[in-house]
Length: 293
Image (cartoon, rainbow, N blue to C red; front, side, top):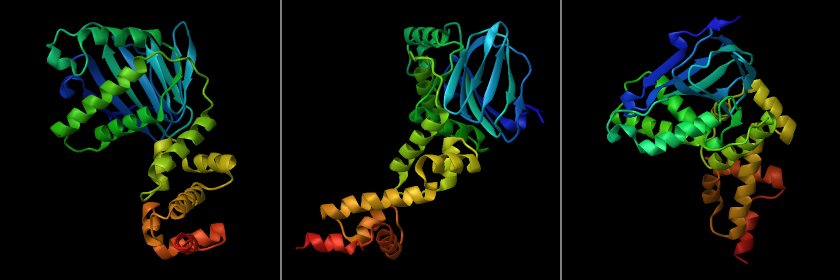
């Protein structure tokens, strides 16, 4: 069943509120159901970033564009378009409306950009119009953080507004850069981003739910794709990666077993030792003993 967007699914913030007169607004949409939007236009340049799901956009006189996870799309001003469906629900997106004409506000309202910077950014965005392009894992993290600010339902502090201003400026600058049109291999990118996330976070308390939210896939779909690629569940992959890092640390002779366990994300040294032995066939103490001889 299609559902028209409601205010309950959308959070917005005006550019003026975060100190950017050249930015009309930022909009973040979360939905657990397939979405549909009527034909409409904007007087600003629209940047749409897909964080979760699959979204099909229709244009008058142009080919349709289907956005997948970690892809963005630039729509020029006054272009009639609509979101025809969210074929892979739940979905999540963040979009920006960048004013087409130069701001008449003082330079202090332009954030980190000068007027000439903004002219270059607008030109760069328009050069990418209607082009389906992939954005980096770093940009994805920034988009997720920005969305969390907008949806958390609490009063935003001055520091929050400052961070939103910085995040939005960096994301829009990235979107304006030259990029080659892509036909992304979603599953390969999903795997690469998931592995990169694990490598950044393995030493901390890792939540698979947080990883799944970061990746933007449904839980069952994510587990299916991850196991197809690695032969392991995400949990088992993380454990094996931690043990491999522990083996490196212990072999260097720079830490005890207990210290190593903590460094690679195990809260219980005894559980670490049992897991180490299960996977490698010998206890971690053998490596520390070898360093003393």
